[in-house]
Length: 246
Ligand code: F6R
Image (cartoon, rainbow, N blue to C red; front, side, top):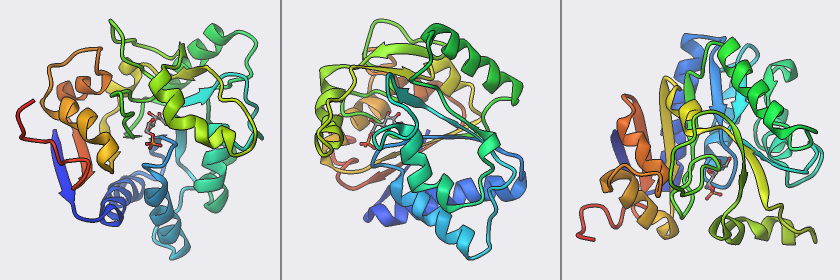
């Protein structure tokens, strides 16, 4: 696990974007796993900048996102599909046919999860998976529990996740869904390279557990200790508890 600590979150986004751009320029048909939420926004901005400068094209990449809320259609402003259109896809030359998403509107959620698993496999797996981390240690929407899940699955979100994200729904007068579909820990771990971004004091406890804690489904992110190629980008605040006794 490589842990990189920077003073400024902007420096983090530049380095994370650089790794992703390097991968795309090495293999134009790369398969990339993306995350939503606040953590990757600056990284996406940097990729867009580099795209506008002609330094990278996303035309041939295939994308998979980690998760989606159950019940939201793709044109709902709070769907993760909408987020990706707004923050990356719609501002670059990503081929819409190569965008893969879990559908929160699927009639049969279990079948939808199996379809997504098969699709990742058909595409040869994920070259780089980008992650954030929840204040409770979740990655994707793998919430703390008693076992690691392998393949995509429907999940009931924890109160901690609802407390962190409901502001986005309240802003438009909606109630946050209680269920989501998410890639499993196995899907994330099968990615050939993983980049995790965490900034701000609210992530410090989860980051300490991720880097120094025992590997346990009670803090799902700890599983990343077992992956051969993980880079964790932190700002000073998110790294502030590292090295301190519990
Ligand atoms: C989002 C996702 C979540 C977020 C995490 C952190 O697709 O899978 O695991 O990465 O909840 O969210 P932010 O970045 O908003 O703090």
